[in-house]
Length: 134
Length: 279
Image (cartoon, rainbow over all chains, first blue to last red; front, side, top):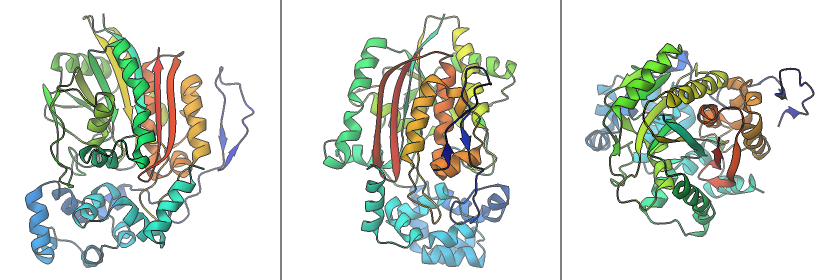
């Protein structure tokens, strides 16, 4: 963690915590869902938002291709949906909160997709989470 | 006049709902987390709130990217938990609202230059319903009225930590100006460090979380100087939900007493923090 001891106390009684500047160089390491992504991913996220309705989940599962067509997904979005590839879904403008609905109806937990994105087994991913508490 | 009896801040991850639905509270994985709420229940029996103002972030249930408010205040008589896409069983009785209070709050906030969106229909998601259920797990009906305040953490730019803290302060002033003898509790939900997306998924930062849990009690202003990108780097993409904790803390005023504190890793992908504070 890039936390250094704070030294300044000149803003009232409140301490100033000095952090290193944020460095988020790899956009797929820690995606920031901004306006550009929100625009490019709109169709994909709109489809995933529709999964709040059980009828729509059933329609998607009955004919994924037709359902993707209905929402006018791009080719890259369709391919990423078909593969349930979360990093590709993010690259195609997906937002994790909407993608979580696609994951859920696909029987994937947050640990499953965490393992998939980080390239480790689900057991290893869960182990990493436990280790963070030690 | 209405007054604030205190605030609870807690994690809200969907897996808690799954654990409640399946009755897993006493399983080894979950027991430490659920046991952390026993002192909260004792505290609630003591302070007996009539109303809870809930700062939470909607995760794509009530709001979509077509219309996404930065701050949204519920103004409905009733709020229902909706299916978020996972088809969980209907676990929650409808939450009672208080439209008169909501409009008082909205008038006060807009006068204070917080130009909020008002919602006369509003579904509430896990971030609202699960913490309510953690506070009152065995209630046949909710013993309190509720006012949801949703803060955008879906699409950047998100409101700053400083702005969310100031929103909380404005909510505090509005509560104190409400001309009825109401006992109001505050709930701030989300966090602490976690990240669901990207190749850094599974990121947890215990040292940063523990620093935040200390600072938010005694020196919350120090935390309001973080930019959202700094928060994301330190606490993970979804660790930015610290914004809801800061809004809740803002309501309480400068000096508070810590009643209860718990920190547990992990529940699902998340470091679960819990605080009870009194003004």
